[in-house]
Length: 209
Image (cartoon, rainbow, N blue to C red; front, side):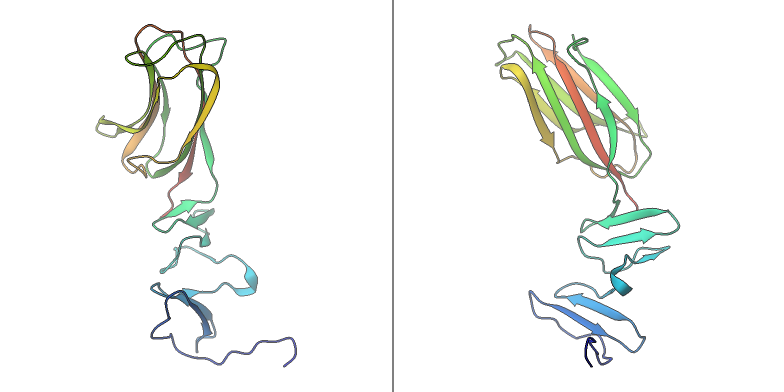
């Protein structure tokens, strides 16, 4: 029929060749996709986003799903459902007007089940000759509910920074945060040098399932 695609009802394919994806409809009146080595996933109707009160089984990386009970859009990263919206958790740490003069902490409280997405750092140590035992050490630390601290990531500033430098960090351990209740950034000074100016933003996602 012109302008239509008609699919005969069938059962779930027993096997899909590597690198292929099967699309088919079954006797329940719904259509599905099945990728090689993956689980069957129901297709949303009309190109819209599927929704419900529980996440679907057999999700693959890149799937999105609206959780009606949570009022959240979820994104599946291949291992877990994350909130689609990225939240900027922290802002400026310091600036030229108030550089860091010694070991300094900045704290933020977080609920359990957050995914650390990205840490952006811009830093500057004016006029210093860094290197060897003279450096700034920046640590992103997570604290558990039993007050145990661990480094999620670290950055050592041991080269001359006459201009502002920027770096982005996307790998953290532990991640996601499940029992941790506190995140803080700590700047530690080693040796005699000029003060550190540091601007930072930590991006996080909510872990939904």
